[in-house]
Structures are given as structure tokens and as C-alpha cells.
Image (cartoon, rainbow, N blue to C red; front, top):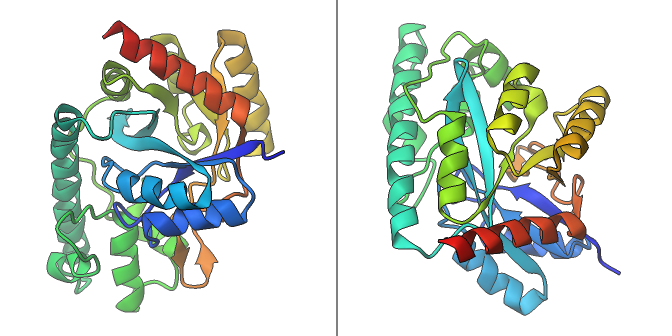
Length: 283
């Protein structure tokens, strides 16, 4: 019996390298029952994924990864069973993507100040289509092509990550506002990769604020963190989720991890579904 789902994957709709249909195909090949499409600040990849899923007999969970800033760093909140066809919800996401574009401009300017011959035009040329939802991995790819760094990891460590020389963070919504945005839309709100933040007091604060779940099984959470977050989730009645954070391939390597390698049981999916259904019924 197929019993698991990858609840964190990205497509070309944001900073992944695969078409939405490819994510669905990979999920089917991995033997999953379901896959969530959770692009950054957009639901544009969901319709194509759901269409592909009809042919392959696998469930696509409409999701999103909302960008926010807390304690001076990026904090991401995953939303599940969001109303991806709702125009009001889509309109709310526009301002989030505009902030992303502003950050890209600031990052490029900072890199230029450091003497790196990078331009916004060349970075944005990497992505086709009208919804140019560009992220830091696209900038990292340009740095590799320019010969400034040898890998995505080096680009983030030296320049783009929170300890990097070019790191910037314009004003964004708070994690609490991200949680509220998802819940107000009728979705279930889950904190993404909490182990990356090095701020467990903030994780506890967001649990108290009203998270529905926490992403325990993620490639960037170490064993101690997984044990701690599992205990907190059980203590507070949160849904324990998991996902690969698959962004496609950077060179020959999957980034962050291969789709299907980090998952959650379908029981977790059903809990998230129940939360979202209940929330929509109250609207």
C-alpha cells in the first residue's frame, strides 16, 4: 500500500528547475501517494501539476511556501490545501513577489559593490515566461557561470546566505503574518525547515502563535533537531510533516534533496486536509 507523500517541492514557477508535471512524474516513480507543490510565494505551478496527476493516478496537494522575515532572517511558512484558484488569494501573493524582486535588486547591487560583474538582466534572462519569480538560486547560478564560485553551496556561504557578504533582507511580512495569511485563506500552516534558523525560541513562539504543523523530516534538520521538534509537535498537537525541498538539479546534483527521499505519512496529509476543510467551512 502506498502510504507516503513528499510535502515540500518546487518547480519552475519559482526557483525549481523542473516543470510541475515533472515533479508529479518523479513522485509517481518514487512510489508516493501524493506530492505537494509548494513554490515560493506563488501557486502558478499547481494547475499543471494537478492535470498531470490525473493521468498518473497520484494526488497533488495545492501548496505554497510563504516568505517572511523574523529576527532579521528569512523564515518560511508552508501552506497546504490553499485556494489556488481564488483570485483574492492570488492577488495577495503579488506583493510578496514584488518584495522578492526588490531583494534581488538589492542583492545584485551589493554584489556589484563587491566588484562582481553581475547584472539583474542576465539573472532574469535565466527564467522564461511572464511570471519571473526569481530567487537566490538563480543568482547563484549566474555567479557560477561568471566563475565567481564553484557551486550553489559556495554561493550561499560566501555571498547569498544569512552570513554572506551580499546578504540583504528588505522589509517583509512577519512569520506571524504569514501564518495568518495561510489560515485566513483556509489553508493549514506549517513551519518549514526549522533547523535552518538556529532560533528555537522563535520556533516555540510561532508554535504558541498558532502553527498547525512543523516540518520535522527535512534534509537540513539534524537528528537532534528532529527529535526535539517531534517532541514539541506531540506536546502541542501539531501535525508532523516532511519533505525533500526538491528544487530540481543544480548541475548533476538534486537540490536540496531528491524528491521522495524525505516524506510524511498520508495520515499527516489527512490531518492537514481536515484542518483546511474545517477552516474553509468557517469562512
